[in-house]
Length: 354
Image (cartoon, rainbow, N blue to C red; front, side, top):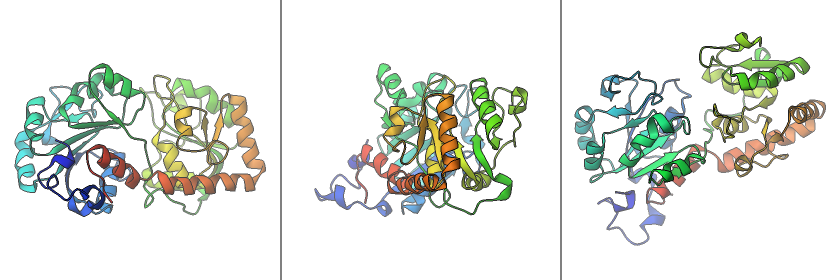
């Protein structure tokens, strides 16, 4: 069932698509917030509430008893699907009687049998936030359980098509109440800011930039190795609140554009940096150019030498840096907020919400 086929909507006036309001939607939202208030699942939830929808929040962090990992470690889908126990959630769903059941990330799904029953009553929608990495162990096994399944990775659309599932792609976004301009702080002031996990493919670039400019590096370990393992001074994990301050305190933020497999991806941090008014530099690739204009709203490079030149130009020309910052800030709010993404997702699920 898609939303437009729900009994509450299907008999509406033909112009219902133009008149439906967020406040008319009852959404049962299921997800876990493993990194706290800035967790993307949490921001999807909060932005839905901000739009005015009637939301029942079910946190799997607060109710781990609802999770069935089939004896595997609970690592949010990276060892396999995490099934939701209908015995726990069924009575809550019946009482709330939602139009839309939204299962957000973490490899979460009801079993195929339970999903088939739920889809007769509600629009059952799932979302992946870690594709394509999560596709093989998890999301390929659960996507068919949903009326609509959304993926963060445009490249993963082909993977879903190969197994006979039509998935829908959504870009990442920013949350303006959180990602915003704030005064810089001396402890985060630097020429160049890197935020990300320590990985071998990132070491040479970070070392070269750090040898040339005043650089700060934040990020946790990847597969047990932290930045110190590679001889790079790091400030460690950056808290959610400190991220916004750090982004506002650096003159240039460099984004790691590739995933673990080495593929270029449009990542959430690009939108968050832009919403903070940061000047962000990342590799050139067409997908990102659909969201930001290189040379006007973000800076791009193809080689390490080109990155060094881009950073140096920003440091030597504050007015140029300010133009990039202002343009990115305006674009992020005009087109790339969670509210924009919810409108897109609702339309893909059968309704147009104003």
